[in-house]
Image 1 (tube, rainbow, N blue to C red):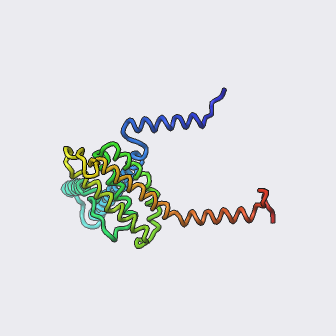
Image 2: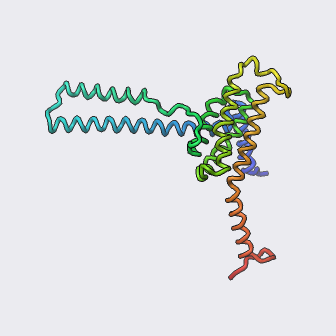
Image 3: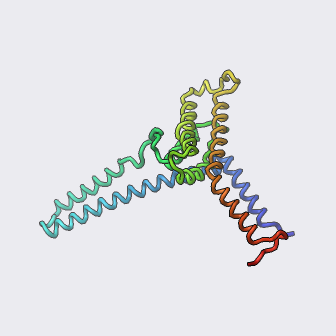
Amino acid sequence: MTRNPRSVDQAIARFDEMAARLDGHPPAAQAARRRYYSRSARVLGRRLANIGMAVGALIVATIAFGLFVSPIGWSGLFLVAVAMLFILIFFSVWPTERPAVEYKEDMPNKAVVQRLDNLLVRRRAALPAPAAQQVDAISRQLPLLEQRLAEANILDPLAQDARRLMGKHIPELIERYQRVPAQYRHERDGEGMTVDERLVSGLDAAKSALDDLGRKLAHEDLTAFETQGRFLESRYKDEGGAIRGE
């Protein structure tokens, strides 16, 4: 009896996912890290480009000086080498990316999402396992939200809700959790919840809110798709399901 290749592929995919979870790096966390490293790679690329342009300008200036002013000689070559070394050191110690900035009301929508994405990647390892799972669930939602919010006006009510949630509420929840000393995180509050449980509950609420916001942001496209589908059905199909000609 032949085996269904699709079922084999699905079994392998499930095994890979389980192995990743046991390893502590589920797919959502890996995807978030890839986005983080991709942004870091772009920053590194800009740094290398700046080094290349600076060295190129130095070489052109050296050649021009030697042709139109006077030969540079050994002392000139030494100075050029020192200048190149200075360029390399300067761009090596120059910050690769801006430090994390506070949320601002005029921050672009895309920057708000990327700021949260970077924060979740950096803070995930310090969170308890149940909270890390909620962080992974939130990370899975961010690429779509980034795409939708990039098209939305900054003053759109839905965009404003998403910005406050991602720019202020989620980062503040994680920051305040990390401020609580570890020895007090298992004490229960007035509602019988520990600090860890409160963190998981808060992240779960944030995940649900982001999912709801994503649906609302995509509602216009969903409605347009439904309308187009109904038009095609009414235009080209009769009641029996057969394709209707002109």
